[in-house]
Image 1 (cartoon, helix red, strand yellow):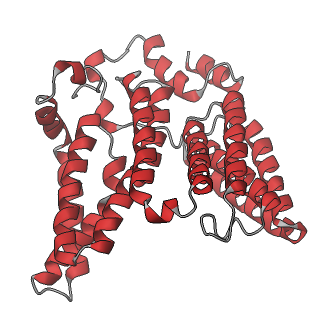
Image 2 (cartoon, rainbow, N blue to C red; image 1 turned 180 degrees about the vertical axis):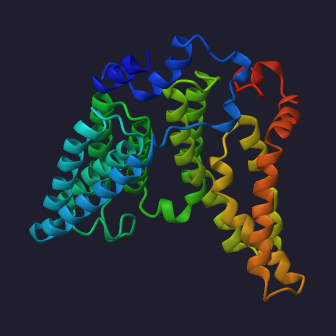
Length: 341
C-alpha cells in the first residue's frame, strides 16, 4: 500500500502532502477528528534533508548564473535567472514535489521578472523606487509583469506561496499608482497607506483561513504566506512611527500596548506571524525601560531574555489563552475561526 502511494507521488498523480494524509486512511488507522491540532500551524517546508541540499544547489547555481551574465546587463541577467528558475521548477516542483526548493524557485522567478522589467523600463528604478528622481511608472509595469508571472506559475505548479507573491506584486502596483497620482504621498502618509494595504491582505488571508478551519488543505498554506506578507505592512508603519516620533519612555509604553493588542489578534485568529513582526520593537521597549531603571550595561541581554520569556510563555499557554479570548467572542465570529484544540 505504501509502495502504491510512493508510485503515485513519483508519477505526479498526487503530491506528497496528499499521500501523507491518505496513508492512515488506507491503513485503517485514520485519526479521529478531535486529534486534529490546527493550533500548531503545521506547514510543509521540507520533506527531508534533501530539500535543504537541493535548495543550496539552486541558490548557488542561479546566483552564479546571474553573476556570469551580469556583464551583459541587468535585464539579461535577471531574465536568464527567471527562465532558469522556471525550467528548474519543471523538475524539482512539478516532478519531485520538493517543498522548500519550490518556495525558493517561486520567489526567485517572480523577483527576477520584476527586476527584468524594472531594468528595461528605468535603470535607476532599482536604487530609488519612491524618490522624486524616479518615475513610479517602471514600478507599476514591473508589478503588472510580476503579478502575471505569479499567475502563470500558479496555474502551472500550484505552489502555495504563489498567491502571496502575486498579492505583493499587486500591492507594488497600487503603491506605484499612489505615487503617480500624488508624488510624495508615501513619504508624507506612510501609515494609512501601508496599514490599509496590510489590512486588505490580512482580510484575504482570513478568507482563506475561514474556508479551511481544520487547516488540512492547501488553503491553510496559502493563508500562512498571506499572513506573513500582511504582518510587517501592518506592524512596522505603526510601531516605527512610535519609536521615531515619540520620546523613548512614552514610545516604550505605546509599543508594549500595541504588542498586547497584536497578541490578542494573533490568539484569536490563531496565527503567529503578526507577533513575530513586532518582536524587535518589543525588545526595544524592554531595553528602554531597563535602561531607565539604571541597567544600561546589560540592557540588551536582559531585554532579549525578557522577549524570549514572553515568546516561550505565549507558546506554552497558547491554547488556554485562546480558549479564554474565544469565549468572549459571539458565536457568529467563533464559527469563522479555528476551534481551540
